[in-house]
Image (cartoon, rainbow over all chains, first blue to last red; front, side, top):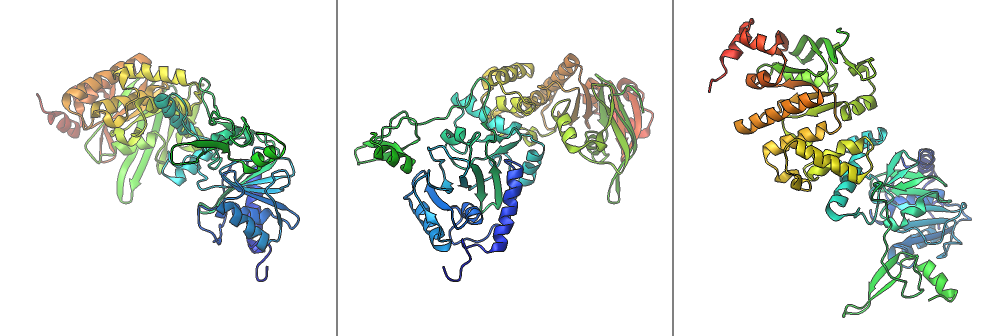
Length: 278
Length: 258
């Protein structure tokens, strides 16, 4: 597109972000500050993710963007079109064909490969933010690996509700060292991060932080020995493709309370139906 | 420096601008002993406590701590992670206002369990059992384990704070006016509790108070401070029964007899 640099951001900015990314990859789970730019979309819509994607995108990359697992929601469609116009890259809805996947709230059901990069949009990179009001203090706690207070939160859940009631953004330990917010993906997706073959990059635009999980890195969800981590999913089969292993969305289909459970990963669901399932 | 003292400080000097807060203060604390620091407001008691516990670095002087392995550690030369670990395990700090220390939005059980979890306890059942055990130790009804501290009275909050600190069996506890702001009957019960726990677990403690009666009841030794200087030090009964320094005499004579 005329008047714009490749993938919208200028080269100096991309260079700065890539340096932050390299540092983030070198220290898995550690939040690296970066000079977040104004992007032509509002905070909370993926300004962090879009800057990371712009910095790693090459001319021969194939981009997939998902929002809550779907390729056809407003956020996903506009970000995909943004890069199709500013970078001229090929876009796809197929998980298998993509080389860069930008995501909000989900990890694709299809296992990712070594030659793929997944970019998460992160609203709040600090896992301790509701527990410790001071950012200076949370940084010190990360530096000293002082994470007792996170367990206090889990303890409270078990004491009050009999189980850990965190259903999304479930805190994880990366490489046995840093406590990390996995972005608001459902706890169901946490096990997919563990020793994932693809490179995982996290961008928080408003909070100006980047962090990363390199391929095949240990990512453990926090739990107690006698209350092990259990990913939860609605106890149904997908109403369209019949999958019993995917994360489901509950859709209200009329005004008499009829509801339908469908795969939140639209590409996975479509792929299964194309092969004759359901 | 005394060889076998648990905590030993020499020539501590701190000033806040023009105001001298501590002037050449020496302190020794032996294992299992309770040392009271008394004096009027502004005499440097709390400053002394902050310096001894490593929260404040003195302009001059050293504080040495004898760790369980038998080696002396300079408290102010310790790297911050080591000091923090010490504060979470072998040391404890009981503040005057429990609301500053307790997590008011977290249940009593969670508050007691925090130090355990910070030390790596990862078994919910065991943490809970410990919390129940310590609620019993500080005479709080076990049924209140899941209540928020908000619903507790002042005396219960202070006892909860003590349980939270002692759950990891520290060897050394710093107490900053633990009975301040409580009414007399609650104070008496709390003093009784502290005396019992300290004796049972062989805890050494530095107790800052402005209340001579508290010092007499709890402490074996006492130091009397005035304007940042130690004016008198010795066995509690000796100092309080036969005060030498005019200021100590004034302090002792101004206690109201009930």
